[in-house]
Image 1 (spheres, helix red, strand yellow):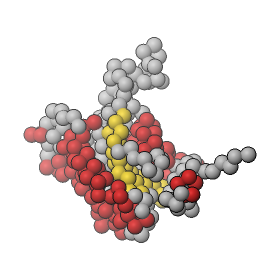
Image 2 (cartoon, protein in one colour):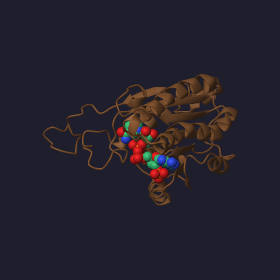
Image 3 (cartoon, helix red, strand yellow):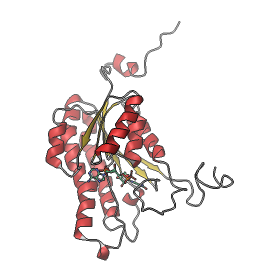
Image 4 (cartoon, protein in one colour):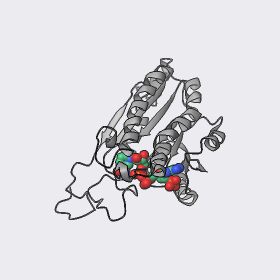
Length: 259
Ligand SMILES: NC(=O)c1ccc[n+]([C@@H]2O[C@H](COP(=O)([O-])OP(=O)(O)OC[C@H]3O[C@@H](n4cnc5c(N)ncnc54)[C@H](OP(=O)(O)O)[C@@H]3O)[C@@H](O)[C@H]2O)c1
């Protein structure tokens, strides 16, 4: 009878990768709701989790749901702009998967955008990429493995009126992700960017018709596919979009038009 090895054994037996000794640890920013919460639930069956966002109550609810799926969960209720605080919380923590997801978009004309709105978007969407990634990347490089996954956006390759700041921050994400990949790939660290189209979350103002948009779970599945790919395989960019902007997705409208 043929021997059947677990999935990681092929690489291990050829001397490339040590066997996993425990569940990988995934750190997810912006995990209190929307896409980040869906990513936490998607990774929970195979990962232990560190979840961070400002809303401690919602974070705890997501943690409870993830624990029910088998994850050990640590919550860090913090503003992702607090570089020193996060560095202190994450010091010495071996993170295998970092999902930089926290973000916001204030979509309005440049001349109507206040300095506070501008700086908040840049601080959360751009500057936090520096200090959260900086806190965990050295450990990945030392261990010779890890994955930094960033939630970008279609706004990272498209422009639109009202997007001077938001689209600008998401264009930054694309340049950051590919440059970082080139720096760390040979150390065994993967860098990827998921670029969703519109997703049904609180990102959009109340009253927006979201019935045609992606579910947050659809983006979470893309993240799961990306971070669970074989160690030698990199999905660097993955664009995920609703098929149609006119047809409601199944369960969210006229069943005659949903498919
Ligand atoms: N929805 C879409 O159509 C869409 C499309 C493409 C890309 N994206 C991207 O997907 C990511 C997640 O967005 P979403 O749609 O899930 O939006 P969301 O439902 O509004 O969730 C945003 C998350 O980011 C966290 N966050 C925001 N500001 C923060 C801060 N200062 N400190 C810590 N956490 C902060 C929020 O947590 P707290 O409020 O609890 O802090 C929340 O968990 C963003 O990067 C966004 O640009 C969204």
